[in-house]
Image (cartoon, rainbow, N blue to C red):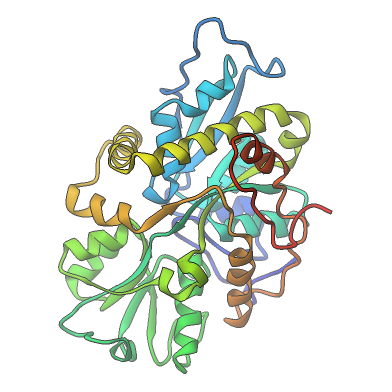
Length: 373
């Protein structure tokens, strides 16, 4: 299996972490906020509906942030439950990718919304036996936000302290790759070099910025917009670095066991996802409010408008998993020296999604040659 080259490394943070030599259970234990919150509040079954394949419920996991808008809105508006009939949609909210992968492996959840790096983790750690990526959800929503008093241009980033969520996570790899493209030398493990990479929990990054202990951060939404609300300036939107300004930030995974045993239930969830995404894109303002309402239900706190509005605008909701960009993200980790070259063949199974898209009259999507053979 691929392994980060220092087994001493602990990947902490929001759960978009790359594989280490430690078991996934240990990864879950060392990630902050790894306990899941069980939320069944939206599992309301319509009278007279029938169970799919006789299944009582399907357990769905996601993170409480805007890049998981499909899951937030699909839960809040009942799109998933509508497609599942009398098979109840039950939800668990996670703060970290390792804990969600562990939940998937243990059967605590069946399907999950999750970032690209933990998807690679789960797949490679299990030698391709634990999960499949079955659909897309979101692109973008990642920015380099800096203190405009100390950093006025991209070249000024050199010599400064820039936060990323965690060693080896998707944003950390992206920043290391970008820094290398500037010709700067940075030791990936220590974060020391021409620019100092400070691995900082997204929850405390705004406080670190306010205290002056960092000069900026390469972070996902809504953390980026929280920094802007504190006086930071967006110096770079990561979308500008990708072809067509698109790259995967959230996709949908499923336990291979559950996919094999309950394909009709998986198809129903994908129908709900496609319908949710269609509604979000047709009703952006109402969808933004819906996502924020579910965030409040999940965490007890809604996002203020000065954070919610710019964060929402930077995220693109899509059914396409943007498979070629997942492969590129893995390549960036290899170049940074954080990951041995992984074999991702078979990580995608888009057959059910393409069936749903075709039935809805939508364009089908591609697995970039990484699908099930």
